[in-house]
Image 1 (cartoon, rainbow, N blue to C red):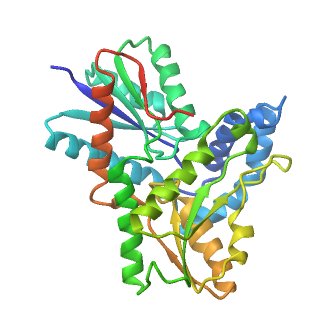
Image 2: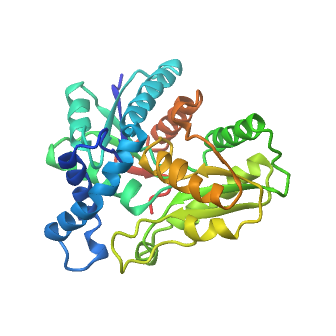
Length: 332
């Protein structure tokens, strides 16, 4: 009988505001995206990291540290339980792109546990070039580095998963019920906030923006809402890089609503980009505009999240049966 291992691939984020850890974290991110500035390398990545670090450190201090890594590990535990309930005994390990444990760490732990069948599952419902694609590429690279030949299934974007869509819709309904809001009220705006991406990545062929828009439509349909808005959380650290539009800062002042229900559609874990950029910065803007701010939580602790992840793993195993290294789902 095969011994199944699952590597959950997450972004990772420092849990505190230690300057050295924050700068190293940012440096890895900027270096991974160095093609945004042709000819740039480690020196430029360090420069950008040192410039961005004070603001991010302040954000971590305001939110009491990032819970992202803890939420990813909680999803790993939930996945193990859900797979066990379906007759699949599996070892689940978390590997992060920019902090520890690294993806290499997670793969080594899988190997040491005697795994002979592997599933790589990015914790990004909407596939993007620097998240899903880069994380899966790193898995392939690290398997080669480890000289480990193992039957592997790769999972790409999963924003279309029906259980996941319903889970996100459930979160919206709960907030509206708790706040006494009516989804059909024209003065209530359902507002999706997505992580932005550089336009150059879209020009290279990434379908990230299309996937974001599709995810919003699916979730809004599940809530039975026709009117909704989509804005992007753009990071303009590189001044000459164009990002997806409209930004939240530009779109929000144009809304005609009394209340805004904000859904962080790109994220399944709470982190600085939800707890600081949305709950503090965007809230301040919304309230200055005279509207009520109501944020829908990420599904980091939703009781059905383990079942969603288990479905993805089982579907990937079925789809890749007899086809090692098969890619499953959207990958661009």
